[in-house]
Amino acid sequence: MRNIILAVFLTLSWLPAAFGNGADNPLPYLWHTDDAIRGDVAVAYNGTQNSNSGTFDIANSVHYVPYPDDSTCIKAYVVYGRINMAASVAITLTFDGQGMGQKTASAEDIVGGSFYYDCYIWDVTDEVVFPATSYTFSLTPANSIPSLDMGAALVVVYSDDTHISNPVKVTIYAGAEWLNPGGAGGASQQTITMSSAYIGNATGSGSLGYFVGYNDNDGSAERMIFNSGTVAGPGNIFPATGDPACYYREADITIVDPDIDQTAGLDVDVDEMLWMVAMLVSPEVVPTAIPTETPTNTPTNTPTSTPTNTPTNTPTNTPTETPTSTPTETPTSTPTETPTETPTMTPTETPTGTPTETPTMTPTETPTMTPTETPTDIPTNTPTETPTPLPTSTNTPDYTPLPTATPLPIPATGPAGAGLIIAAFSMLLLALKRRV
Image (cartoon, rainbow, N blue to C red; front, side):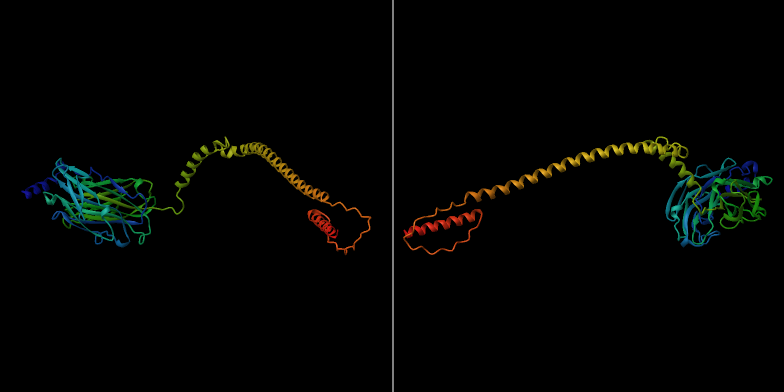
């Protein structure tokens, strides 16, 4: 039964009226590097007709990662193509043992009203970690008609600052465009437009790569086209080999004018295939000085916000007209306010407080205490205690006079002198009484 369905499909696919001639569903934009990288792209692909699982090895592919130890994965996608007999068929991807979820086709080219040429895309960036380069995959459920599978690819954008010196930008377009030789050349050819907003800013060399599936014939005039010029071919540049013949091909290109959109085209000649990926690697010039945008934004925002709020209280017109009014208004405001406040406050407070307290206390206390005590004690005691002299006797004594006593030294003044005088006088009276 499967063989009958396949035979009917292959017969009808050659009829342009029944199936259309493709060239009506150009690949849409998918992703690009925001900043320049010192890197490249790598693609590993597998046929899926005989098995819906396998291994992607980006160290042994047509375009591989040469130094995985020094490389970093920037972006990675798994892209899978198949023909479904119904719309919105959901597929589940398991990548390196991790479930990546179930999804319907990311892009779809409907041919003949009942054949859906679908492209499924999963972002697996977080799962691609160097230096590992080999990753298993499984796609379920398997196609009910295995011969209608168109292959799967692991597309990796990586950086390697150690071995790559020229900065580049990478732009990816991905989708489903079914091409077949159904008309006079035009039916077998499609062109996509790559926006200049996504490519590098420099002229120079780059590369252009296509991933296609189900190329079951060998054409002799297949071509890769860039800006209307052939960059690969004509010839059998997508050979019908493998399981089935899915293929990635890369060609060198030159960017002449990075400011305009670039066009990329594919001519399959007499072959028929599903075009799923187009990747452009374009040169980028990284400025060595400070970027142009930094000075433009800094001056514009700084003066507008700062001067408006800060100078409102101090100078009225200074911030508004910085170059014109600054010299005129600055001298006027400065001298007027400074002299007025400074002299008024300083002299008033300094003389008033200092002289009042200092002279009042010093003279009052010192002279009052010293003279009062010294003269009062000395004159009062000295004259009061002086002895009155005895009257001289005129009688002749009838006794033998006593020997004359040697007078004691008597102090002239003070209480001690007076005491000695009294004591001597008392002793003399006592001696006289004994004689009598």
